[in-house]
Image (cartoon, rainbow, N blue to C red; front, side, top):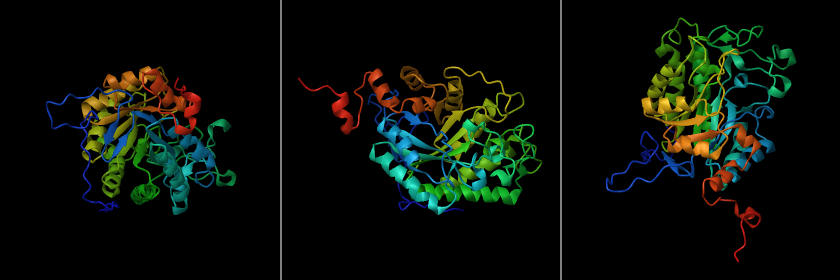
Length: 391
């Protein structure tokens, strides 16, 4: 059993209701209205608003190391008013990278470049988080701007991909090497070691990536998992790998640090992973101490028919929030501040993960404050350019 690396084992956990509101013992006190710009306390951290920068791969790291690009890219979103800035999918092993340019946290040399990012994000009043990932059968690929095709051999920079079963993502891709139980144990240990490094680097929120067709999602879905051992077949067996990782990380993380899990709520394919199974999974994760489910969808198979539209994944966040009684984050085609606000005020989710819109507009959160009738919290050095002089 892993021991907590917290120096304060008696640290009290901030109590949060299933809907993300701090519980009150004063029944006569009026409950404040919750909206996109209201604060949220999860365990020992408080978000200054409900706007989260979604983890988005940049594909420009060298040997997994964060660079000046990552510092400026992530730091500018903290300057821009986001409450939680999530570092992109960060591989827990070298063969867990999607591409050779992915960020990594599989060795101690990765800690300080990541720590520099966390320090700057925190200096701007935001919380720094990191997503821990293993790409599974979708590893060893070119970056998107080169087409994203599989790099099939070590001679051209590729590596052997892993998965639950020897079923490739695309026809013609190399078949993944099925993980045996020893290999599964090694991946669990890699997630543990990565989480320890993340805490040393100063991150205050950890997210397990179990979505978008990567390794942990591959184990969850019956479309990619054809195993006949205790990691395949029944729903309980298919959840086992992810639940093991979540349990181990919750035990070793300091009690005050939140643990999130990103899932794909559905494969969008008949006979695949679906919303009902996601509710069961979310309940189990909550029982293990996971604090929030980051609700995305798809990514497991290349030919799924996904009805992409404004807020198309929000109903999944609502369903999991209501039926599993756990905090959720909504993500996907959320670009307008008033829409994001309605998601929170309407009880669909507790936070909103803004993805590509934050690539297009680093100061989206500050502009959302203005559009929603609040005084934008521009950084002091920018104040003379954005605030009118007193008459």
